[in-house]
Image (cartoon, rainbow, N blue to C red; front, top):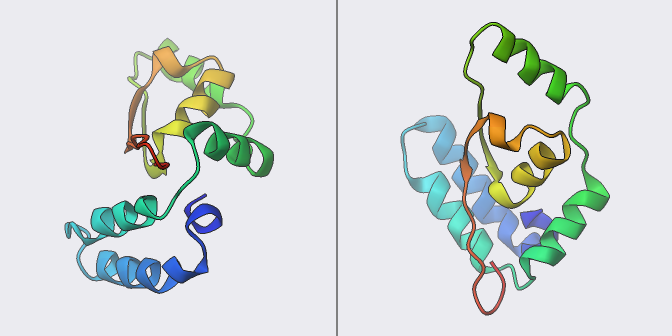
Amino acid sequence: MLRHFAGDAWLPDLEAGLDALGRDPASPNWVDTLQRGCALVHASRAECLAYVRANFVARPGLAELVAAAERRGIEVHVVGFAFDLYVEDFLREAGVLDRVSLHCGRVRETGDGL
């Protein structure tokens, strides 16, 4: 999503951020890289979500996986570098948003985009 809305000019920064993350997984550089990418997005939350819905799909079987974990008394945590605006949408569509703990990138909408 960031590549689409932030453009190719952001790619060198992305590469540098990924390199830094590979060298030191505890480095805050990756978060800084994502923040700089988000600053380049001049699209609304709704536009970003529409793009994600048109270009990405959640893997099938998510609801069944969550139900199987619940039957076994296992808490379900969804963890990743993806952004909440579309991860929440995928989880909502699968009917499990209120049954999992979500740990991912949070975006805020500004007057000029994300």
